[in-house]
Length: 207
Image (tube, rainbow, N blue to C red):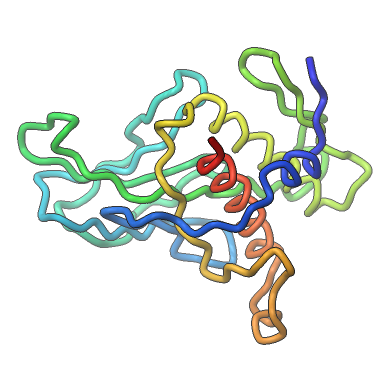
């Protein structure tokens, strides 16, 4: 098994890229962090029904976590759990998969309040790799390590062809870092979303 550090993962996939056009968009209603209720906006509607889906790394597929009102846009009633990838899907009455339209995807981070709540590492489902959580690092870096591990598990299970574009972060900055004008808005949550966006989009676009 290969032990990998977060820095190595981000270095390999470090390529700024912007999400492709998608029929819809989903993101947290609270840009500064948890709790996260999902805001959705699906085009090409109205559809017969809408639902929130989460990617399940155990089974390697999307599972329904919340039904939604029959509206092309809105905010979920319930907050969603951190440490997972979400999308919103709208489908026609026949419920056939080809009739469904999916949004971009959004990663909701897991934010531990204590280092004791985080494991020492995250492993792939096949045991091919293990990503280290640096327990001697500040808590925000340990949280990033853990989220990188969880998102890498998702990318592993998705496969290259099944990766929808990710919603562009509210405050997306370049590889050189945020501009002076952006600095007042750059919280630890915003920083983490930028790091995870680059990880996902870099892997999605890599051939």
